[in-house]
Image (cartoon, rainbow, N blue to C red; front, side, top):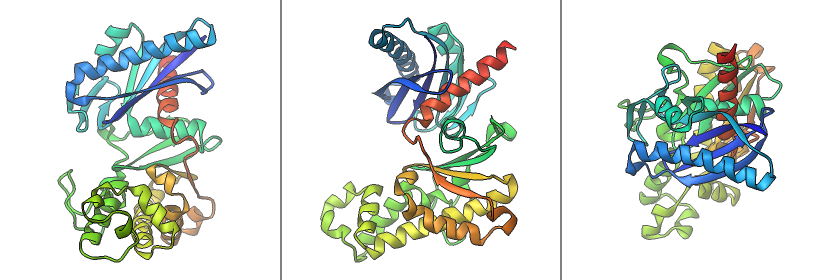
Length: 327
């Protein structure tokens, strides 16, 4: 059976899957990234996981399995044409010739791109965006980033740097961002940003049921999922945090919509798990700030294949690039 390997590389975990030419994930494994061991160790782990996945699926299915090409979604700034990971802060990589090393190790074609782009590509083509031509995807997690798919193709912009929605500076936000700017969208509206502001407010005496759940030093254990849980129990403070985050996201997207004119916006990552708690204020703010001609046909939805989109998108991205290379 011929398959494509899709690999989603994060600072904590690597997920590797085998995907059929029609976009179905047939086998998947997950391993700790262990980025502290260095880039050579991580690249070897990626290669070993692709081989392990192929052998595991062959043993399980009883079919001979052939990996045609591999797609790798990497965090940070990626040069897909040169095959170089320019900068990945979570991995400690800079100007790493990832494609050259992986192709030499695996003896098969390898294609890399930014992990958010491959994720959005997977959702646009094989998830919530199936059947739509112009799709803007946004991931809300530790940070915030976006990507645009038009007629089955990703948009990159100059130096492949399009999509950094999380680094739009927003009026009313003042926190410094690790990027060097102050008041970036993701300093509040990302999952980590919401948690950070929640902890700060609770330490300053803000009334919330979260005090009962995480008293004293246990406050450090609080996660974004706890905000959703408190929201569902009617906690007004948790609601105010999520309302503000959703409103900020909607405002930032209102800047993007007139520029790229999507017919669908997909919200993925941890933000997808929050559902309407985040999407309701997002939509209200977004629709109030764009022209009726945009608003009337613009849909906003959560990701359909949130867990698999990165793997599917990386594999199908590799399929597209490989087929184009063969022409």
